[in-house]
Image (cartoon, rainbow, N blue to C red):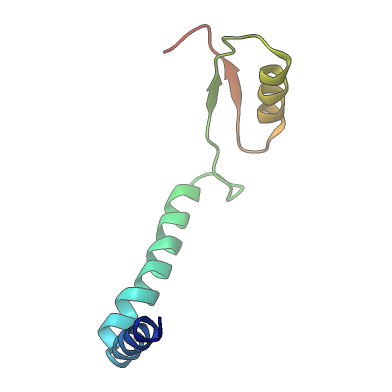
Length: 86
């Protein structure tokens, strides 16, 4: 176990020393997350994306009705009922 921790520490120190690794490993993912967040929220006005959801209640149980109702009440999830697989 001591050997594994020593190897992990060495790899971490080597990664932090190299600025390119630091940029690619930390800064680039954060930057891409921000860019894709802005892309999906663009043109929505509220800044919150809307994802339409179709619900097909095949078994008609109470649990599925509660789930469909909860999805319908969620903000940003317009729910429509489907008669079958579309």
